[in-house]
Length: 450
Ligand code: GUN
Ligand code: ZN
View (cartoon, helix red, strand yellow):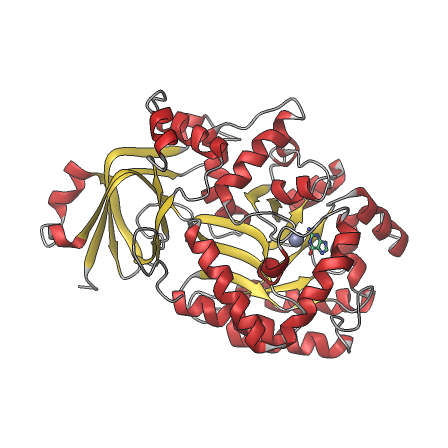
């Protein structure tokens, strides 16, 4: 019954609970010689090779990809990224609002051109899959073309992705602005109907942030979200990134007591609302984010690059009112596509505030934590029966020096900490999406569809 069985053999690490809230040892499974069994894009079994293999006599040696000196993990999850900013990644930052005006808005204006959007989408997927990221929560931009280009490329790889049209009708150049507020919502709904639950694609309603939408656009966006929320549609935006932005929001919405309330007033704060950054958050706001079951994306590379501020994970994960939290690259504010390199930065952001972040918590945030933030923790982010088979294969001998260095580390978490701290750019060997290998570092043609 069902399709062909395949297997992945190697060391395996997967998370099953939140190490910020539970004893760390109870939060993961690690198999030194493990086997994952995959069928029809889903994981059907996982465990120690000697126990699992005999249960599947129909599985021949040719059906198993064996990885030596490697760690098989759930694919990484990027909870906040702008694919449309790939062409301007690494542009001089200065401050968020200057950087948006100088580099971001002109670049995003070019996505009216479908050919340009197609080219960027193609490159973006290559970068994500090369880094072992298999799901992302993605900003497109104003134009329909930018949404279609993204989902079309995602459909080719069959990745589970979340994206949508960005709603923005004030305080930005005419070339990027929604020319008609009511029409912007009509277009968003049309794209939602076209892409939501088409294959593995999921739709998000995306007001860029409160300063670039009129109150009417926020109102209509909230109404659209509420109409579709029970069908699993998302709301994705920026929140509490930097003080100058918060001050601007206070000026624009003087009747609201805080930034979160601005969004909540318009019906935008609810389950499956994903808020990026959250660096400067008041206690009342954390309480609202908890109560409404929102997700937040910690984007340390971007926050450091733009001088925004520092995410406080101990506030987000306060045990009396924990908030679903994952990692985001926020490319092009972030300066690379690698989730492990975000962990490297997250550790330093914590250290600057007299805290730390160990490898158990870090790699949880990179996988299951991200899935929880996106309310997909029963679908992706773990290697367990019933989950979608999105998998990264990390190289535990990624360079001559790292191989030598790792001789002096013992446990898998000691090794992972060293690897994330060295910040290597190529330590993902292979990426599987829905059980199919779509990226292989050692192949001539590395990407399945590039
Ligand atoms: N706030 C509003 N737009 C943006 C953006 O494109 N990047 C970042 N980092 N913050 C934003
Ligand atoms: Zn962003």
